[in-house]
Length: 281
Image 1 (cartoon, helix red, strand yellow):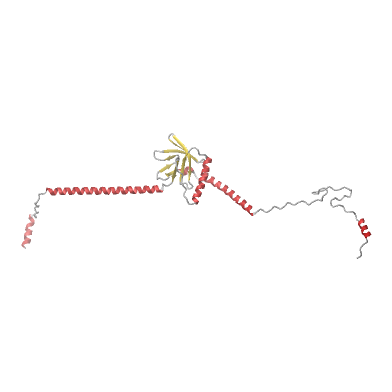
Image 2 (spheres, rainbow, N blue to C red):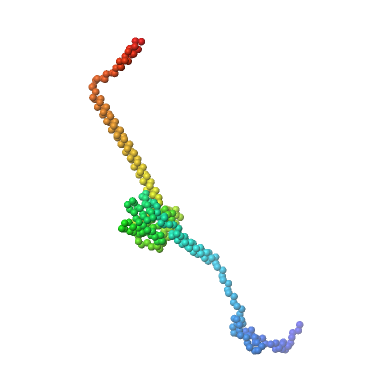
């Protein structure tokens, strides 16, 4: 193939229309330059719309933390609802308070009815309950007092604490903490200890087992001692009777003449011929 002459190449280049710069807009037939559109900036070509960058995927640890947080939140809500139901709506405090109780550690019975607490036959307190605040007011003649009360979870124990500083919020917080401690004690296999001290009285539905056993042992010991005393008295009475009888016999023996024998009893007269006939035969 033969190369084209230089003049012919130059002539072809001159005949071609001059190319417009890429950054200049093409002229319209009427000579007007079109305005830039979209992201097109004056002197720059238009750019395509920018797509949003994809979000990085959530890490596994973050997902686990969110799930755990949601579970804890639901558990707290459920625990709060259960505590509210269990404290204010589950039981009837007026009904559960009534009946026969025993002072904890003793076998002393205490009778509680709808309006009175019978500590003894002569000591009777009138009372009123506030089941919302869990407080109690009581009167004894001209004297009056107040305090707070609470039941154990199984309603077998009742504790009354004297005082006028108790409020609805305070008793609610105290009961929540107490139930939390009781839950820990139960999980560890420990028995829940009842409070004791001045101004606190605790009751139980059953008499104290140790006190009851001691009372029974004392009753058995008393019965045994009484039986032994009765037998000793019987022995003493028998010994005194024997001594008196011996003295009586000894006195009668001394009254009889010494050296004389009592005459032998003779057989009746009607029996003598029969005896003689028998001898002759």
